[in-house]
Amino acid sequence: MKKVLLSSIIVIIGITFIGRLSYLQLFSFSPNQLFEDPAIKAVYDYPERGYVYDRNGKLIVGNQPAYDVMIIPRETKTLDTTEFCNLLKISREDFINQVKKATKYSTRLPSVLVPQLAKEDYARLQEKMRKYSGFYIQKRSLRDYMTPSAANVLGYISEVNAADLRNNPYYRAGELKGRTGIEKQYEELLRGRKGVKYLQKDRFNRDIGPYKNGKLDTLPQVGKELYVTIDKELQEYGEKLMNGKRGGIVALDPSSGEILTMISGPTYDPSLLVGRDRSKNYSKLHYDSISKPTWDRAILAQPSPGSPFKTLNALAALQEGVIDTDTKFRCYNGFYVGKKKQGCHCGGGVRDLNSGIFNSCNAYFAGTFRKIYGKYKTTDEGMDVWEKHMKSFGLGNYLGTDLPTGAPGRIPNKEYYDRAYGDNRWASSFIISNAIGQGEVAATPIQLANMTAAIANRGFFYTPHIIKQIGGQNGIPSKFTERRYTTIDKEHFEPVVEAMANVYRYGTAKWLKVPGIEIAGKTGTVENFTRINGERVQLTDHSIFVAFAPIKNPKIALAVYIEHGYYGGRYAGHIASLLVEKYLKGEITRTDLEKKMLEKTLEHEYAKPLSGEPFKINEYVW
Figure (cartoon, helix red, strand yellow):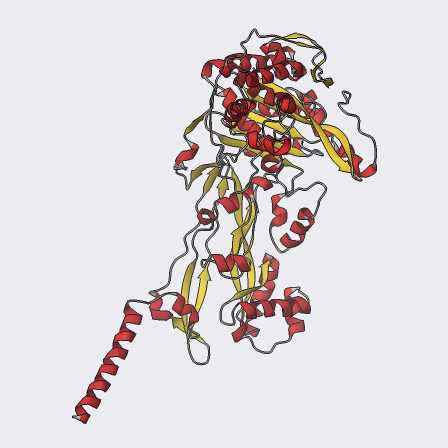
């Protein structure tokens, strides 16, 4: 009996072990087990990153070969570090630090020792690497830029960090990942999928061939080609016009919401963030706290919108029925809030909707703003209605673009003013600056461009986006092809559009006309304050301009924001007219405007807060 019992126990234990081993091999196998097996080495085959083309099929981002020196710490042997470091052109201290970093990551898995060797260095090293056990050279591709422009749009790639490795098991140490712009937003499409080969090793740690005859090996999948909405030539031209200027420009196709150009100035050549000098160059750019070339003003700057915002107050007032095209207000070279006078440069006199817009009369819009609130019993009710109208144009919130960053701007609500003044303790006169786009309202250049596109379309817009095609296909997300309607009825747009056309015909931008193109626009001059040594100081005004063209069937809508650029028709207006002509005609006839923008800079204005030189507010001379 005891013998039977003992035999039974042995048989049961044997069956259990066999069953468990079978289960592990047949049902619960994971490729990760291969990485933990010291007898198996994984060798990765990295695909080319996807190419990026502009809206016209012009290549703007390709690839170039690069070579990384890799290390597997447990396979290294004693070596002449001085000789090796001389070959790699690195210091002994850097070598030791990188070896420690690789060992901490994994003794069995490969890590990058020296990234992105130049081709000539690779050729010199290739034959000598066999002397150094545990080190090898791995080929990969780096970005190759076909344009010196659009760094803020395209973004850059860099080596994954510890957080990336923790958060995404796809990546291995030393791999590259998109950090900003298109590279970040469409990382999974652009990177493709790396292949892997598993090699069997013997007890002497020598490669003896493919593991399981290569049945578990995978081939790399090349990254998807992306066609973006940017016009390469328009982007490059716009960046030339921004020479010596700070600000942001966004141009859209109103019929689709496609971003034609997105410019931030000052900028940098995207090729600076490629290769072994990437880190050094990035630090220099990132820590430039004065000009901030890595800060994308096109989508992050949030200035007051200035006078272009008057068009929305006019539309809201028409929709609410508190004014019509013949409603008039008298301008006394400004308007009064209590005993305090707010100035105006329109020249004074009686203004209606048309002249109020094309002469940019502050008094007219102060009166209009008061009428919106005066329609309702309480200020809170009026505020709710006004806020709803403004936000329907995409202001005061994220637009939902396919850009990886951005700022929401600001459309204040009743809670905002309750916190400032107390509940039921404020009136429209407290916030009258919002009537003329000053006060507490704020908008990014892309929001102003989108607002202008909505006016150009007479009441709707498409969510701005950068993607046009993926892999040669038109299947972009449906949210970018759906119309988003404002709260304003279509019939109210025509008088506002006509007044914006008159801005060019005989208003504040009459000297910016472009032969053969009917343009509608609006100038904006935004007060600009800062604190110097604790004192509030008024700096030179910001210059803002919005425009669309042609007036019928518009093909471009844009916003230009120039820091310290004086009044709206000056720097911003000049640049806007030139970009419109460049896009619609492909050539420039207003060479007088072009010459000024290519030659004149605002560096003297940007130096004033540091030098103590006084500012001349609204200086009207060149």
